[in-house]
Length: 178
Image 1 (tube, rainbow, N blue to C red):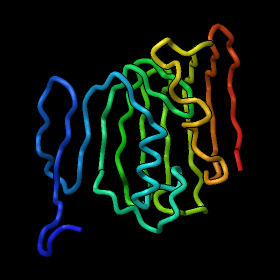
Image 2 (tube, one colour):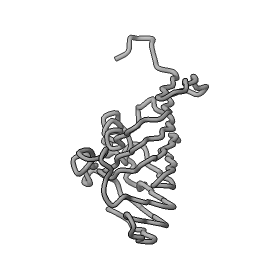
Image 3 (cartoon, rainbow, N blue to C red):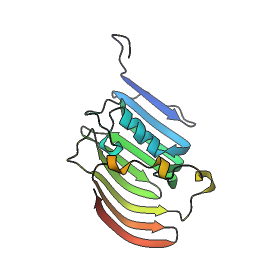
Image 4 (cartoon, rainbow, N blue to C red):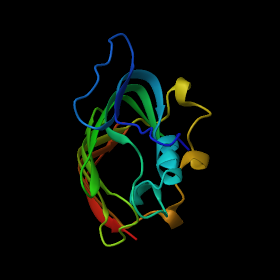
């Protein structure tokens, strides 16, 4: 717990070659490039902080100082799925995280803050192109052990315009997971 009278106001964390600038707005901004990003690990952190419904947060409000991020990963691992050269840009709004994706997964995600069970996790992708087999760098990482617990997930509404698994074109996919 911070000493009385001290509080976090604003900050920036930048990983990569460029330097970060102190943001004008309150909160923490994370940006940069990384060879590997374990997305599920960030979801677990959000859960511990009171996090988002997408992370299965049980706390009421989101107490995290994180306000925005812009990260490009050589390999982004989510629920055991390797996404090569994936960019994730997100900003926290009053009642949800709005996340834009560029790369093998291109589109948007809206993740409600807190445990607002009335609002679903919305995934709207123009494309999701998954490799038939993970890259050698992704071997041994991710998998079922890193996947979020589906019993703690909110309702998920998903729509993918162009879903591909390796050379197999599966076309449009949509549905609701409860």
